[in-house]
Length: 306
Image (cartoon, rainbow, N blue to C red):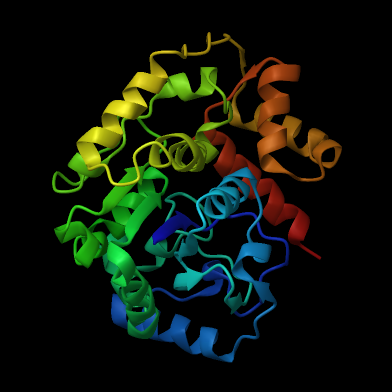
């Protein structure tokens, strides 16, 4: 049995329920804000299965990895907690990414972190369902998360039976990620050479691309291997790849970059991954993933206004 856990995406195929927009929440203590959000969730209607709500290449890669590995797919959602791909859920706008209007951390007291919010939003019944699958046939848990979600779930991951048994493998997009020391032995050593190998892409979908390579090339070759054996296979594969040559692009300030994003938005139907590629490859503009995500979120919010 293989279980995959990946992250939700900011891009969704349905507009958020008006009651589920984090920017509209009041400030308060963790418990009160969490209770208000839970009340709103209880009254919101589901609009689609989770796998059909979330958009973007990262989710597509995770979905394909699950199909390739005959695995159960779960999604860690900052707004909903732990959901299975087939769960029918509402659309919402909430993130733990700092600096965005929808960041829930901006509504909470200073010092509140991602782990605290996850403990508030992750419900016991969904966690028990997840844990029950991990008990089947010594299941292997494959965790593909960006750095901020890995930080949010680090405490939770260490409570799972698979962690105690060493049956977890972790994939993330940053080579310099500050990962919990207890989880580091299970971090698979993918680096930027993946972008010069069989599955090039952006930093935003790196974890899921690494996951898919692992499922199709590493796990299939060593289904019973431990973390060190799997890491050795990853390193051997990467020896055949090369880091892509970085292109020096034109630097724009935020106002200039916002103007360009607005102008090019419709040309890619608002698809952020394609837009970032267009900025970098077609227009020769230097733009970091995190900076682009914040500016693209600003434009998306502008266009959602009536």
